[in-house]
Length: 462
Image (cartoon, rainbow, N blue to C red):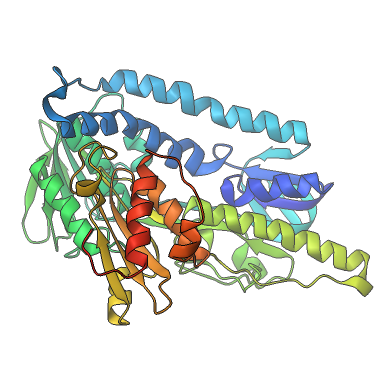
């Protein structure tokens, strides 16, 4: 039986970052993968999604700049998909070569934990000192009549041709991000939300701004609706809700959430605790078995299930295992095993335009009496922000004039929120920002100048 120091079940960001670090620390490591090496984000999620969105961002920029351009181009979906496959498909191969070169073994198949030191893959047993469960999540599908006609995000990002009429079920990231693309392509779009909100975790005034914009771009939102059934018709499909709403459409995406992959991997047999939200772990990311960790989206956790948090957890587990091994080798100079502590975590809805936030939610900050400031940087910095006059940022100042949280609306929100994450996490003051020099005329330098004035709590409107 082949033996390892650490076996990872899964090969996405929740696994391979730790695998690389542990291999560099001279540990013998294996990645078990039953699907595509490197996981969902690399192959079917974040990477292809941002690539597919790129041309539509350019269209948005051109539209905002008005009659500067004589002609507005159109996106050729077939060529875009060809480009997607050229760029995205080789990534897994490149990672496989890297892992193999480093000495990380890749085992293809479905991994099942037989006991705390044995993982079985397609009938072959592998021994290990530590196990890391990084099996991620999969798409949830509604259990309704006609569910066989539903598609998920993975299907959407592999469409050979784009439908003229498309319907999204759900009001979260996937629906609204894809609706932004579909509307810009010129399709008629419907979004079915089971509640009275979309993008619930985000600053709702900015969500409303986005919804109003999408309404003008042929996106219709149906709130407080539950899908009842899907029927095949002569021309496509008919979606009917419990209230009787009927929508004729060409394509339906079920974006009602994702489910942690906890079944059939040996959790029940070992008594590893889990819930419908995922695997339960302690403050060291250990399961109820003392040498089995869990990482990434498969966790039952309150923090956002994002690629960066999965990577953070993966790196943390690598350090935990290295520290445990060091303690075994030298118990006299034992290293303290520190519990995981998450820093400020930015979240971004990659819609057109983007909505981003970090730190304390603005609504919570208002309840706590923090000062709320708004910077309408799109109006003030038209030359830097490509005439995006409705772009803005709202942030909360605590009693020490530190930024406690921020939300941003605009096409540059995903990059700007990274700057705000640094400011929030490090509790930077306006004085500290003034002691640094930033490139000009960059998009971020202008907003930093406006931010510094507001952080000083000068009573002017920007």
